[in-house]
Length: 112
Image (cartoon, rainbow, N blue to C red):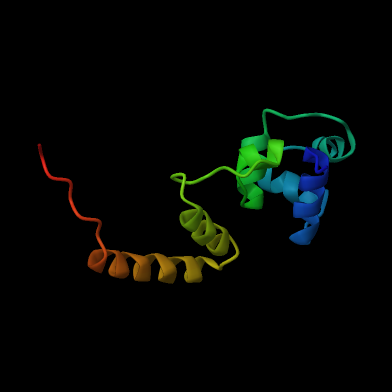
């Protein structure tokens, strides 16, 4: 079973960041990150900031439960793919998605 401590440590390590680097990005002390990674704490008031710095959803970081975007698995797949992209790749993807969306709008509901 994955824990907050494991998710935090794994994410930080995957980015190649030290505890100190993550702490600086969040604006807290390194010892706080160390305590989160080694204790049985279930959360922190800084979780949203930590999650943002790591590029993940705060609820997932805390609980390990993936949240649904618009309750649509296809949208979640796109979000998952885009999380791993560079800023330039995200911008290009968004631009292209807007172009494609113009040609594939859902039909408007008729007024009764």
